[in-house]
Image (cartoon, rainbow, N blue to C red; front, side):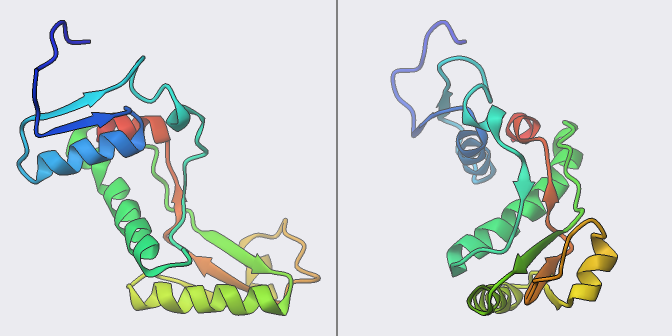
Length: 161
């Protein structure tokens, strides 16, 4: 911790998890040099430390879809940029519908995601079984697969940011 904090700054960010570190990272990328990040204990010691690190891009709104896509792309490049291992692996995800209503919802969301350049495909029960043989697909009515979804180490993502 700094002995003396500056008396003013263009931006003061409270919280040193993924969100706070991301704000600081992006402001620095924009050329801001007078940014302060405050954390009560140590970086990533709060909610970020407990996060599962799942990086999914299928979201219910346009803005959240665009943000999720951007985040996934950033996380794949961050390790190279900073030298800090992020644990980012794009091992894909599957969203399964067990009702017609849910199928309609995930297909609609997939169409929106596709419009923003996200790699997403409607898949059959046989295709799901081929990718994930441990899943019971007997009552599945539809599914979507996002091959570029993945997982990361949230604490290291924050440290890299």
